[in-house]
Image (cartoon, rainbow, N blue to C red; front, side):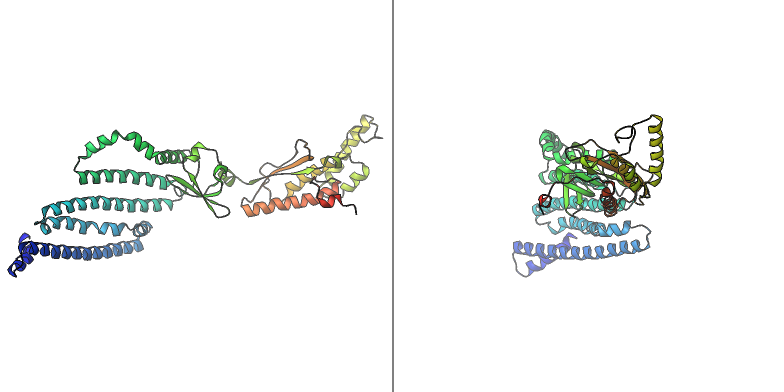
Length: 415
């Protein structure tokens, strides 16, 4: 083999060229020829491996083969054979230039380390994409674990590369590196915090991909689309993307709406503020008028009989409405709202339904509706809630009640 590599050199010397020039030209021709041969071999191997994996993916029941091709694993694996042949041929091609040959061998070793890391990265990305297709794992922060593994792999690879280039033994280099651990911790602070946070988020099941979270500190309000080592990406409902540091999930407070999504309904908690001056006792004429409301007819009859019996038994002076037991327009309206909510088709009847009166304020008396819509989708939820309050706002006037609102310019019109 060595004699064959000098064949061109012998021919050039026989043609009258000096030995130095003959050696340089011989080296150039051999090196260029070797590179062209290896490039051709690499091209053929890539085509063969990619074609082989593509055919396997067609006959396979899983998508793992397709993901290997997508993440360029066959392409990277195809580079191994040409690189090994290059390392084998370098001593022969550069036998007249051993220093250059030695330098190139070190460069090839370093390139081999990086090629190994590229192959590992391709395989890990394939595993990541495959795990995300599994129902039990698609909402887990798999990216974080892959990134942590790759950081360690790159760190080890760089240590080996540095050892090869400098000639320093790896263990001596690591010993010296230990003295700089404080600096390393400072440099990789966010990475370490992100890794710890990813583990806690996963173990405690705090956030999954697809969860709706609200993080006021970072202005995030939407669905989690990605969890990796350093950041969590949230697609807000206005389609913008908010990036949150992963460790913020364990250091700050945020709201996860998963409990609502997994429950039987979405909460409605909204109030009508009734003007206090519109509240009054109901007389017989008022009760007779309200009995025409179908949702209240049975209730008012039974309630009226019970009150009338009580007042008679206790000989209550009913010349004034305040004496004895009475019904008020806000109390009857509260009963109407409760009956209306319980009959509404968009409300989950198996969950809490409550109409309650809150503490009076300067604006009036809040009458709060507390219930859960059966449809949790945002658009439908808003429609159900609006439908309920459209009706109640229109119904208030039938009870001679008024809803508080701040005065506008029309409130002061003299005409």
